Length: 449
Image 1 (cartoon, rainbow, N blue to C red):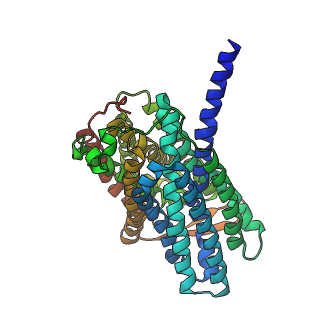
Image 2 (spheres, rainbow, N blue to C red; image 1 turned 45 degrees about the vertical axis):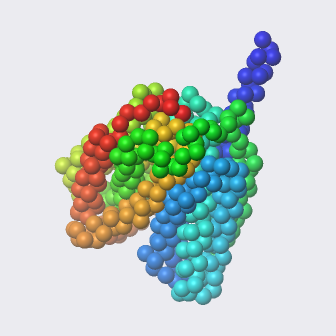
């Protein structure tokens, strides 16, 4: 009896040490890409460019995340140790390079070379680290946690979502305490810290000893041939609903701070941002774990879209963003919309790899998941920009005075009508995604893997 307990305990330890912990180390590191809003204005001011010019670095990072995942999925499939090492080197090198070019821009304000260097380092080099780092632990987790694949992938992807909540206060503290040039010093310090975290994750990550890559006919086929084992409309449906969910999420999340200020909660922006990040992470873990109990994992996407449509419609019909200031009920509804969209945004990410494995098996899951993440790349270029264009085009800016926690008065410029109009676009897209989920994505056999 004692020997059996020891053996079981060893197996359980191995599962967490060889899969879950390294996945969290990798995802909690690369997930800090979403901390961009914490320091984007500081970068712009330090190198002498507008915030709009520097914002492209973040868009490029998300684009190259998706594209590197699409093109390097086969590398991840063949060798997770090589891909996780590439991730650690590229992510850390990208951060360090970003720090160097911020320093160079501070010495030479308005230097185009500094701006381009930041685009290349934060966007392209870090983007490669993001894509390979995001993919590397996913298949390994599903192999170790065969009966709870959703819980396992949700745990790791929740780390990606929670990274912002964990790292934001640390980054803000560093910016406040590192003195002159704190912005580039922060990047150089964090480059070293995250390299150590990711390198440890790289060393620990390991597939189960009893797993052997399939050598059957399916494995020898091209990825396109594997996708054709089911109607192509099925995969197109998964890609489209994934793309729409990210686009809508980014559209609302990118305007989140201004919407919160618009409803009279300017002094609580930081707290609400942290809570929404927790909902984002909770959605990644909760929705994916819930999906493990369902016959068809696609049901989760239907629920996400229905909830998003319902809350968006309520805030639209009540004019919550325009009329929310001073109205407790409308404030609650607007915050509910923000939290539901954040949770659904996160849940959409964590359920994609397991949904794909249900449909196409485990043989090529890293490569297929990588191609599907190209939806993230294109959404990263369209979600924020769509919302920004709507806010700029519709409505008009108005000034609002808010009493801050220190007793001072802050005057801010907001566009309540513009933010409200963003909801008209997202609800249409959510309805399209729900139709796609209902009609194109057919039920899959969860035991296929």
